[in-house]
Image (cartoon, rainbow, N blue to C red; front, side):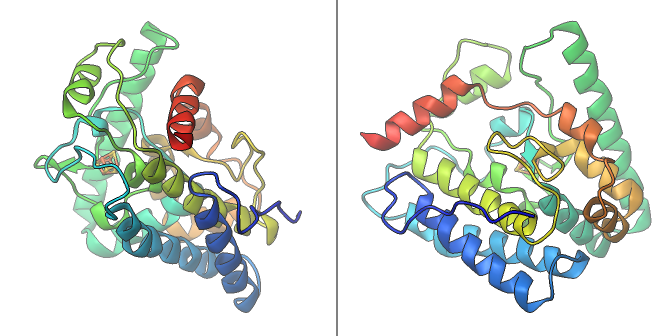
Length: 268
Ligand code: SF4
């Protein structure tokens, strides 16, 4: 376990102050709960999610923050591969176990399995090209797990819906303009929570997100967690089981050019 470098209070990078605040609160929760366990990791994940979609998201509505085109019912970005941190998957799986019947859970696992197979097929047919397939958690044109969706889904945004649609429909040249504060603060909150878990004895990840503690493909990861059950999966992960390795290998990262462009926009 290692202490992580936490951004200073006056760090000007978009999202840095949210990282710092989340990391310190998460460490405090873990210390109070006696370290990492299924219960404490779930609590950290839940608090991070609530903070991100509550107070942090309220900052995005301030007049000085650029508007985005994202609206209820628009799901074009849900046709791209999404990622999630392991603790987000445990929280999501635990929520599904509480809010869905066994038959509904079996149906969700079936849709996740089909999505992973289709993603593998697309990857084999065109290695390096972004996969396009609807997220198996979409239902009736909406996210069926909206209140517990991963931070990557919360933070992704676009100034204009047309390139989102064009990209989702297969145009590799279509480019979305992403608002950096939303993108980086969502990323910062989820990464800080994961970093707090790692520095309290949980699985580690490096700066690039690589490692047992790092993010994985949402569909493949959620399937692996639901197959074990949320509690057993979290405890296996904390004990060092590599059962998420396949989901990590399937994860699609945003091209460095996109992240660099978003970061650059944040400086202007
Ligand atoms: S979890 Fe919800 S918001 Fe995220 S890609 Fe799936 S349907 Fe979309």
